[in-house]
Length: 295
Image 1 (cartoon, rainbow, N blue to C red):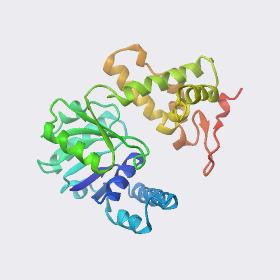
Image 2 (cartoon, rainbow, N blue to C red):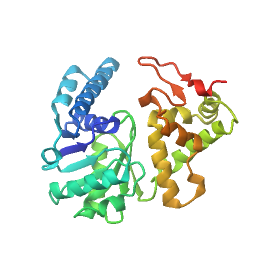
Image 3 (tube, rainbow, N blue to C red):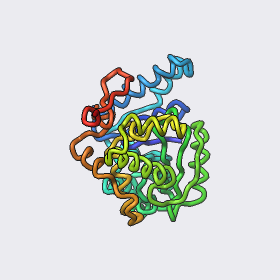
């Protein structure tokens, strides 16, 4: 089976890495050649970490990298794919445009999957020629390590396509969970209101950044506090998902906290920007609360 991944960012390169390490031929597509170079370097570095841990060998690293080819032309990268996984930014219009394009490029038997974390699969499928071939494959970050794949059926998604994607996920040593199409699906419908409430708790000065995260880590056995997790996900991504939930359910309980909106507007996006609720220094694993939240 030939796999194409659209988008070479954090999720895209992780998905490409995972398929390639499991023996699939992968075309990684991005309009930016420099982004593709960064993606291959990231994959190589992550493979090196696996080697240090003793989970793979140098030979597996070499084979994995050999399974990945990069393209800046979607036509060349996707024309012969059996499965295309879109992993572009969490923006409805961008995703719809990509799927319109893929529908004209790919063969009628190709499965078109989206790694969207919140946007309707039914809506995405509606812009394609074969909506029964469209499905959601929501991987978790970091993709090579996280076991879960949310498999989201749109209204038109065929049972055969669902079975194929479920089985394919198992071949990647993942645990697929089938869910129906709804704003935020399962993972983010539950997770994002919790993160949003944690931000409100900080905004209303109930407690500080470290204190809120500590309560959830020690009291609820979460491996990472909600504010640190928001930084890890990207505050812009959190905001985008909350807006989808707010619009989709027309319910004020999903309204993004003003603090989150302000932080995104000023560019404090979390780890990728070097600052969010915490500030991040290259190579440092120490968590340091951002200056604005230190009292």
